[in-house]
Length: 174
Image 1 (cartoon, rainbow, N blue to C red):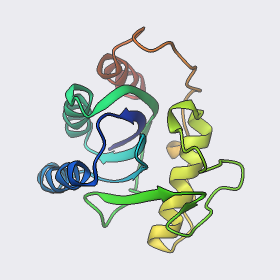
Image 2: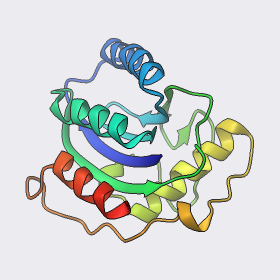
Image 3: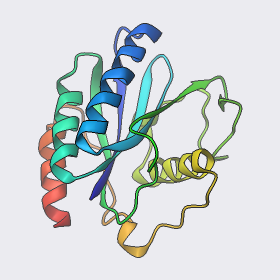
């Protein structure tokens, strides 16, 4: 099982469109044994997906082809033994102002101007871990196998296709 975290810019955002995305994601993710969480505002999204590698690759390919996402940036790919969001085919949280539904999760990651495409892999994984802790009301303790294998270096948009990057990084995990 693998987990990926990616960020993207949202295009032509509306809450109705987001409701459509979430409904389709919920159906597809239940079918494909994918769980995860999505955090968004009107401009950006950060999503963690976890499940079988083939299902994650297919879901990520659909996301990259979806014209509601632009400049998709793969932040993290890792092997996992347990899910951080085991009970949700897709959980969504909206960033409003400085808070995530009234919760300041990570002090050093400002939610004002929520822009996860600028985050490092470490920031993204710290945020996802804290979000999991909050949503599941448990303290997640990643095992050594759950730790990132390498640091993600920023890349200019368009240099590498995100789906190809995911395939290369999954191959490196196996």
